[in-house]
Amino acid sequence: MGREFRIGKLFHVTPLVDDLAAAEYFFDTVFSPVCMMRNYSPHWHRDAAIYVVRETSIEPMQCYGPREGEPASSWFRYQDRFGPRVHNVAFYVDDVAALDRRLTGAGVRTTNGGTDDSGTTFTHPKDTPGMLEFHEPLHWGARDPRFSEHFDAFAADYWGERHPLGVQRLSHITTVVRDVEAARAFYVDVLDGVPLDALPSTFADAESAYVMVGDETVMELAHPTRASSPIASDLERVGESVVGMTFTIRDLETASEHLALFDAPVLAITDRDLRLDPSKTWSCEYRFTTDVLAGDPRVG
Image 1 (tube, rainbow, N blue to C red):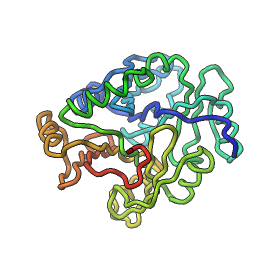
Image 2 (cartoon, rainbow, N blue to C red):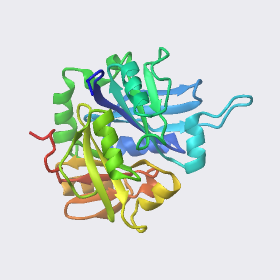
Image 3 (tube, helix red, strand yellow):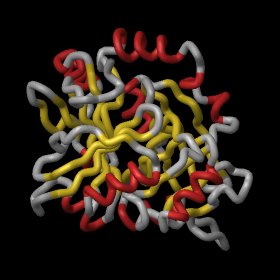
């Protein structure tokens, strides 16, 4: 396919939370992020913040039930059905309408579809590996600090060297999928993703494929191979959805001391990685590792 559009940075990952104050405390103490936005939207009837950590961005969102005479938002309906968890992954794209035509041609249903002035389209979660959002930078290009020419140097020094967590980069986002090859084909053939070499899965009793999407985001597409896999219940109950975010860090011991200082909900520690308890982090497993993905094109 021709390159009618270009996917850029990760806009944000959106965990729906039942207590935004608690989520903000978690992200503030663990990551010390830069806050890009914090507001209440009367249109969507929700409170949210957008936090930047190195090259990635996380948008914890607390949705409220419908007001009298108004329908519930799709975010609220999702959380009401499945509980707090990641709702979608969003990417910047330079031409939403062109991307929407590609998606439609591949049999993917979308909302908005570049037909309004929002510059945004969402995929139907039954047609893609979890719900995806694509957004033209528009006013966010000015508000997002990652577009500053000084940001990369700042981020490398602030998070990579000075912060005790020592985040070097977002290693990958893990989505549980029903069919690894079908999910991989979607990212490669429809979204122009670049496949990585075969690598082990982040989760036990699972098989995975890894694909580079846009400028710098790696998606892990994981399928449980046993019912005992930690992600098998997510696939059965929720369907294809984000179940984890893995960060490459500088030093495990220093990171562990930092997390202990703020009573972060550590589930397990090995000599190579540290995992937080997803039951206490809104059904998303945050993992910190000194490992680097073999063949990672971002590591030069």
